[in-house]
Image 1 (tube, rainbow, N blue to C red):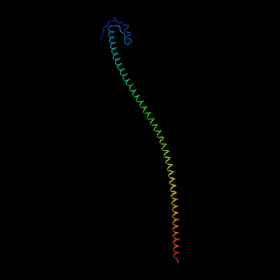
Image 2 (cartoon, helix red, strand yellow):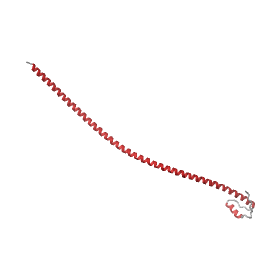
Image 3 (cartoon, rainbow, N blue to C red):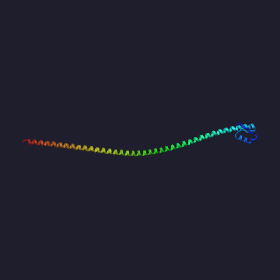
Image 4 (tube, rainbow, N blue to C red):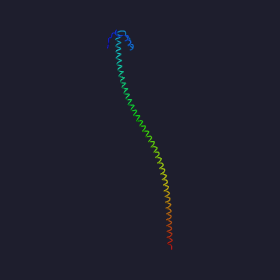
Length: 167
């Protein structure tokens, strides 16, 4: 890629200023000019390749950024859904706790009622047992009295028969 350029046609001052801006030494002859022009051309091709590689990396980074943004949006949606589910679960748990507290209170009331009824039944059973013993004693007393009366009647009849049989 060697180009021949006539030094007379190119202003070396401007060229040297460009070389200096690129960090290269100035030229003073046709040979140096051609060599530097070749170096500048090679440098230009390297820059073009690096620019293309940089643009390709930028394009990949942009695609990655878009993918990450899409993934972030999806994850944000999932997070919102999880938050809604968590809120619903917390509300259900709260309602269950309230219901459980209500049922526990009701159970306590029912247990107290059962305790009262049990005491009342025990009291009634004690009273009933007392009444039965009382009635049994009364019945026993009545049987004894009846038995005495029967014995007295038999003794009276026996005495009357003996008296009636005596001449």
